[in-house]
Image (tube, rainbow, N blue to C red):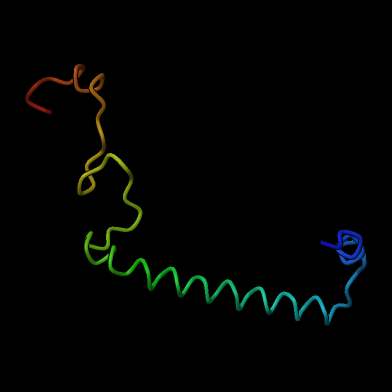
Amino acid sequence: MNTGYLIHQAERTRSAAAQRAVDATHAELAASLSRLWRFLAAPLRSRHGGERGARRGTQRGTPHQSPSCLAALPRSSR
């Protein structure tokens, strides 16, 4: 790999038009990856009911209670 040329590219400044073109290309790449991710994750969302933002240790929105928390609670509220 020609590291000298990579350093040259990193140090040179781009014109505003060139930077906009690079930014547009990066935006297209990000949008494509996002579409791919949504496509690949769709079967998992449908299988799990589409719960967004669910945390680990929760079941249907109930907060996770560790054993130490359970010991402090009366048995009727467990």
